[in-house]
Length: 349
Image (tube, rainbow, N blue to C red; front, side):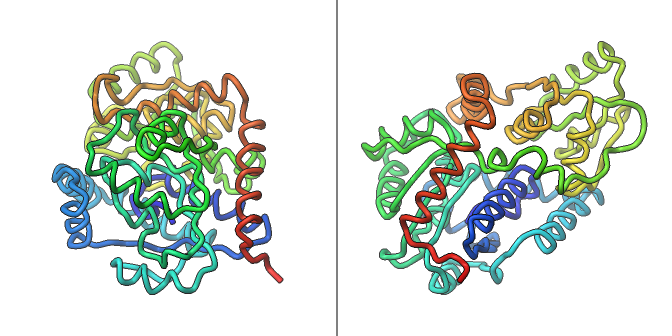
């Protein structure tokens, strides 16, 4: 169980990678298709003490989606990708739906992405809807932040993670937070996209955009300085700037070429075909690394920001420097295989 419907390429592709790896290990596997509505999200916000700003952020994203045909096409392309490439459960709209569907499984696995980020804490991604006796594993769950959350959220996280048989997190900073909150230090494992080799990703990759060599620009956040940097790089390199738009700000760059409405395969093709990448995205950086592209990384948050998620990219860069992708991949596959075998998850037989 992970994020599936936030319209994010990284979320979609990490979900694909984890399911593919588990199925390649010989296990039957599907993602729980959790699609909570506004009432469910609002109730969870109140229960967990999350900021009402999350609802405003969600409204802003829906406005971009409603205003831009390309964004609507992107969501449709992601749904099509799931239909062609992945196995999903029937749709679950509520905790009641999740509770009912959990009985069909032998084991539940949470991960990866920022499913455990305390800023938008949701107990569903801690699998708390299932019977307490249900085996649970968390693979590379990301807390996203590096500052210990408030006491209320610490208590919730401590109670919910106590039900897990095995937990790994995605960043060293997350491991330190878990020690502070639970007293136990989980191992750190790579994001699922790192579990597949470049050749395996190339099986999904659509043709690169046609035309002159390009600088691929992919930004999740909004900051006028991003676009100043893009134009500096365009002038310095002589490359045409190709933008995958995500925000209103991205759509507003009238002098830049847009790659609008792309699905996950087209996103991979754009990365694979780029001469250079400029991004503030964790998965933008990860795929730039996998496809061996020169990547100009812009830090999305100020380090003094209490909700800064820079720890994700900082940890990834350290791991690439100290270990390299192949070692990271082997560590992740070994841990996951060991836990699945230990829990006795049924293989195809």
